[in-house]
Length: 76
Image (cartoon, rainbow, N blue to C red; front, top):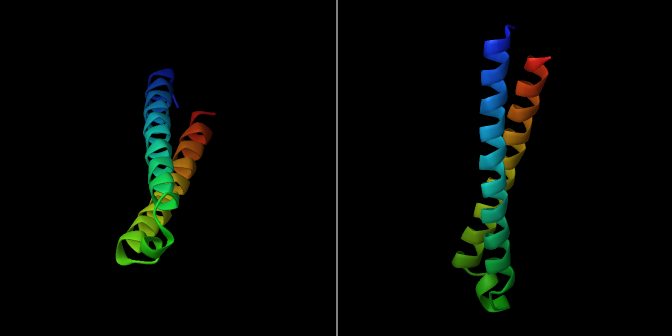
């Protein structure tokens, strides 16, 4: 890989890191929201939707980690 493409790949990986950080913050907010719900609401549809959103954000974070790792490996 030439230096131009390597630099572009690094720039894109850095952008994904920023997205990952923002998603981690959003997930933390949703977890706090769920934890602060009364127990009776946590088991309701609203609580279940919050839990599903957290699970989906976890999946997305894992995919971002994998993508970033692959991009870093491609730069070597």
